[in-house]
Length: 192
Length: 299
Image (tube, rainbow over the protein chains, first blue to last red):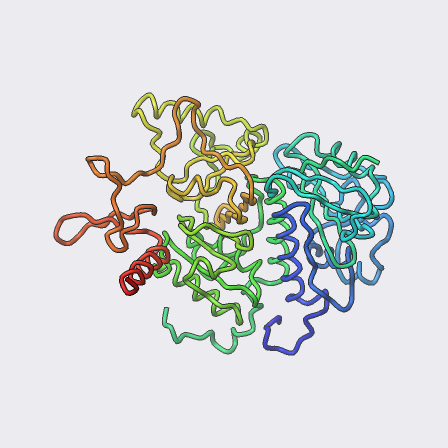
């Protein structure tokens, strides 16, 4: 039970209250693409594991080709593992170019396009290349600063999302912050 | 519902928000996909709720999947906080979400669940509007097969819907859709914006708040994200018209209660046989009335 009046631990990433708060941060992130959101604090996980705990369970498949999630947490998630070509969620390291071709859904079922959780070094630091985002959820334009994202990701993303409504949605995450880039967001800049 | 009613002790052990964590997580995943594909009717499981389908179970499942103890919830039905549907859904949220506060004020709410209206007060970025939807698919009047409708939606093929609007103009010189007006989101998908009046349709366009649509019986969730184009389907030479509430001599009717001339009005049949017009949004009406009283007190 996740009654707020009980003494259950709420700062665990596996607690329902944490997952509700984390989901609201994610929902706000998807509503305002490119805008940084703070994940709620938790004592037992960081970054990609938090996102997986909020969104994944035994109903979905997850591919973790670089093994960014410890096997104990994979067990705890109860997810089915799958190839990157079929999985509905993929966890990847943003510093490496994407070495996979995720599913982009079909014309009549575009929601089957994968969600890729990309671990980056930092979303707070603007020392790397600033990106300009435009599209639904953005009032005019939104600047996104990200460190540790290989620029091949942007080209791959453009390729995956070339035929709307099919496409792939990205969740960039560092240890505590998250930025969503749904398939509708146009990104420019970042040439380096 | 009896205001003193409490769940029996044996049933007092439901999860926060009634839905189990797996159901919530599924709805959460679907919400994120619905936001990512603006206007696309994303299928979801739609769990049984302890109330009839068609009573707002879609909107309620959205609310219960995202609500937390920090939230302030407002529930309205046709603009009113006090009608049967709103009172019962609010009461259900109070019973199953301990710690959540409820309000009748649009400005104070972090989550607003609504049936058939968008509040008059403009929404902010930190608010979320969950609309209860009876019929999610605008194409159902021209194509009975869902498989074919899904392809038509994917291709952005709304020719047959436009033909229906054109036939209306030929026959009646007016598009005869008073509510559920087909609206194109982000230049691709056309949505049924739930039975909101035409008056509210322009409020979906480039709104600051996220708007989510939940159809419990039809098992669909779709979204109009903030700062997103939402344009009613019209022809280039026939502009979209909303209800104007003009009298025969062309003057805008005021609300009979608060005097507002900038709100959506309900037409009331009086016992004396006459008619009166009054704000449909009760919170807005009360605010206008309070502001008018303040002006009288401080000369």
